[in-house]
Amino acid sequence: MSSALPCTPLATAARELIDADLAPSLRNHSIRSFLFGRAAATAQGLRAGTDYDEEAMYLICALHDIGLSDVANGDQRFEIDGADYAAQFLEANGVRDGRVDVIWDAIAAHTSGLSSSPVYRRRRPAAIWIAVDGIRIDIEGSPGTLPPGYADEVHAAYPRLGGIQALARAIEQQAVAKPHKAPPGSLPGEIVRLRHPDLVPTWDDIVAGSGWQESEPAHRCAEL
Image: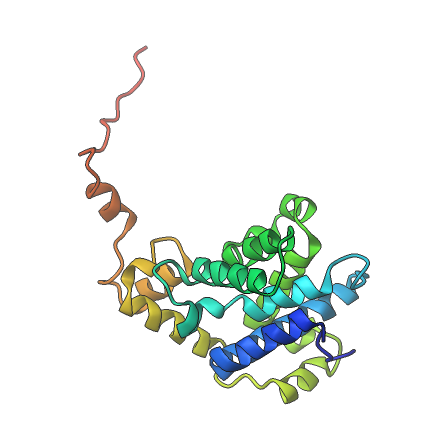
């Protein structure tokens, strides 16, 4: 099983970006996600270049956490900031076609759980859900998810360096500094709710603060 990465000019530019701007733990997570996703796709009989766009899949994985870097840290959830920055990166490198939308969609929704839906997989390019599968394997998988010995090979080249706990800390630090980046129901919101419950409003808080002054409806039995 190969650990080689795509070497197109666009893939090389993305690697240079994450080498420069992502923390090493996040950079390694991003690269492992690509390698694990490609290995899982191969095990399912999917062929790079025929069944999915390998470069697009690599770009999704490489850039999916760029919103946790200083260069892309805006005022939205890290997933959306990252998707916006990835789109700007692609356009600055001459990409003007539908790949921009595909990669934006994948990064913006990579924490949503959408990719597990069979309908979503049927309706969206395979590069999206293969990439998200790889991200999921690196977060919640195990060596047994992959071909024998492959996880060791990948980890030798791209060690975990704190692993997913480092990822969670990066999300937490951003959201503590800017609590509006962690809305209820989002991954950042859940991490902050567990670690800093006073910082994140609940759904009831949001509804109570609206200008509609709504109250709970009275429950009435249907008349006989």
